[in-house]
Length: 163
Image (cartoon, rainbow, N blue to C red; front, side, top):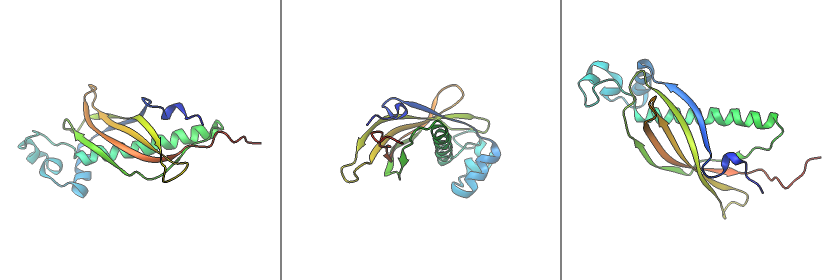
């Protein structure tokens, strides 16, 4: 079976960009991370950050949103071209989540994923674990967030022929 080159080790997929506004930072934080430096611009100025900044969970959530959207676009494109597409399963988890720099209102992050490799699952014939490094970078290219992720994936059987 040959694997789609976009799943080969080292393959990088740009997922898109997201502009963090003061409103989006506060809206997310009020629901999910209501610390003063995420919900109150005045209090944030007096904090260690010196200004309103996004929750790290917000930056990670945007990665997931863009990842799903990018995958949907790639799937539609592949199907339109008559190519088989893999089936994705759940994620068994992630490791090494790091937030390196604060993300302030007005920052636009670029998100990506890089394939580290795949390995077959003996417990689930036909399925593999797809291992990724996931990241977000600011406008100057500085890494602001990264984590290692895994997901179940079932590659199409390319040995079958269609008639």
